Image 1 (spheres, rainbow, N blue to C red):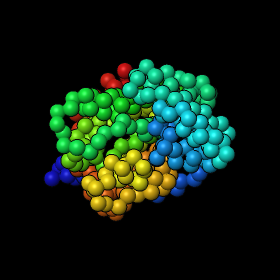
Image 2: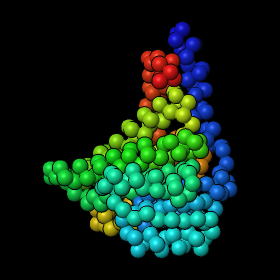
Image 3: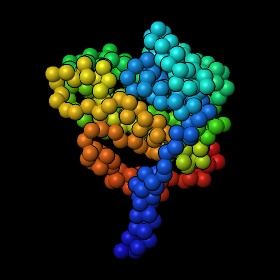
Length: 292
């Protein structure tokens, strides 16, 4: 009973703030005006649409993907939409050296960095897992490890600008599903790593926000082709999805949920996990972290 009286009020206050504060904050497109933003996986789908939204809002953008020809078209359209500057750097995120060097090059092109949007993935067919270790390794390297490399390379610039890291993930990184084990493993890894880093930033007073975006099925060409004849669910529009991701990053929200099912946010947002994470901090010597 003494524990309940002592700790229940602050715990309830914490969760009320967590659930309601960010939702009540209003997004304004001018929040992105003049901001310097990287978007990976931007040659098509959600990444391409994010680049266009950012351009309309007046942001400087640097986009990347493997296809030079497609990126040229994306950059050209960004400039038509009003981006003060738009550049592309083509390359594969299977190459960790490219990933690291890309961030440095993008920072030089824009003169800094305010927001890093990590959106790229490797192709992963929907199949029963048959022991293809190469696919697991490639999925983890591209969908997870390159995200870590990019964020580490970007962190010094983001610290200077009090910037943001936006990680595009999936419902497959919050719940298990058949036929996508390698993909799902990489998305679960994103949650574990970046949610832990967010907590470390909070403990050590690093003012770089981390937003994890949990998406359902989005009507990109790649996704619709992959699920054809396998899944019979409604897909959400990529244009609106892209905008919600940008909003979440601009508002520095911890998580963004976007799916056609109205109950996804309620069921996947895990208050029990958040409570345990909050209580677990009492076991740590925070002074040690702050000193280091």
